[in-house]
Structures are given as structure tokens and as C-alpha cells.
Length: 292
Image (spheres, rainbow, N blue to C red):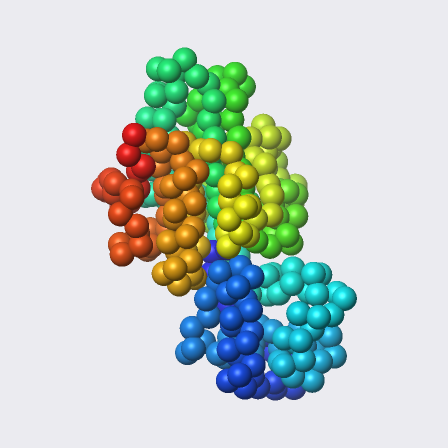
């Protein structure tokens, strides 16, 4: 869930949302998934939801709000709402400096600690995984570090997103060269099968990742995720208000094992959100750690 509302939908007719309709829909969206739409972004709901009104043949946003609450197809429409309000702009090996720190310092340290304890088990959670580029990138880095020994490890990357549509795309593991724009050529050659302009992630990478739908607003959902050594949640919490941020960060803290690591977007910060994590400073990245 890397960026919200980044495209404008062009309508055959212009639909305007009233202040009351905006407040009702904004509060409904927040209640359902925790995404907060600020007052100065009213036009974004017009642009994003207007197309849904057109397809449902509804005359205004008030009717759409009623539809979401009472229509027999409300559950199906809620899924479409989630897809409309989240646009997934991402790529493989996004933010290389941060991933270098992850590979050289964090993952290497966790693997060494597991070996020291006589364990070959690794759990990583990718929360807000979008179309799969992030968890597959993590899996490729694991392959790079462990090499042939990877087959002797019990590894699972739990990859979750709000949108079922992007999860279906992630499971197909088929990408264009645009998704690979930040990926080193040698990595593309090693971990993808190319067929024309389509690049498919190789099976040995895919088998490390398990996809599933999750709503970060739902505490029960969060508690079902197996406890992890590392949690990735990059470019997601910037779309939450402070209360929702605290709730989600607290859930990550509870999920992490003692000494575990939380990796958020390079432009994101836990400042004024949580003091539970120790910030570890590296060149190009800050990685948060749960005290052992």
C-alpha cells in the first residue's frame, strides 16, 4: 500500500461531494481500515469514488454511503472501495540503502543469532505488501545470504495487504520491466524467468512467501500473524492518523520477538508515536529494535 490517491479518474460527468457526504465517507473509511483522509483532500474522494458511483448508477455520494451500509452487495463493494482508495506504487529493491542495511546488518545478525541458538527458523512479516515486490525482494536477499543452505531452513515471509486484487497479482508473481527498474541486472537474471516483456519470479523464491488479506485496523487479524524476527511496514503508516499509527506500531511490537526489528519507510518516523523501540542509526537508514 505504497501511495494513496495518486491517480485521477476522469468522469464523463463531474460529481461534487458535499461537506456532509465527505465527513460521512471519510469517517466510514477510517472506521473500516484506519486510512485517514484529511479535510484538505476532499477532492480525492471525489476523484476516486466518482467512478464507483457511475458504475453503480448512483446519483450522488450520499447514495453511495447508504449503499456501503445497507445494500445486499455491500461486502463486495467494500472490497472495491479498499482497492479504489489504495494505489500501489512500488518496485523490487526499492530504497537500496535501506535494503543494504537490512542485508548486511539486520538479516545477517538475525541469522547468526539463530545459528548460535541451534535454530534454523526465520519469520518475517511484510505488512502492506502491495503487489508482492517487497516480500519477494526479501526472499531474494535471504537466498543471497544463505545460498544453497536456504533449503535446510524453515523460512516464512508472511505478506499481507488490504486489497485482495493486489494480492492476486502478487501470487501470480508476473511483472513488467517497470517493476524491475530499481533491480540489479544480475538479480533479474538469477531470480526471474523472462518471457518477452514478462518476468516471473522463480519458484524457489516464491515458496518462501505466503500471501493473505489483512486489515491493520482489525486487532484480531494482527494477533493471528505468527511472531516474527523482523517486521517490514514501509510507506504505510503515513496514511494513518496518530491514534491509528500507535495502534499498529503497538501490534508490531507485540508480534516481534525480543530483540526483533521493525523496518518502516525511509521518510517515516516513530517520533511522537512510540518510545517502545530503540532506534539504531546506520548510513542511509534507521532501523527500530525491540529490546531483548
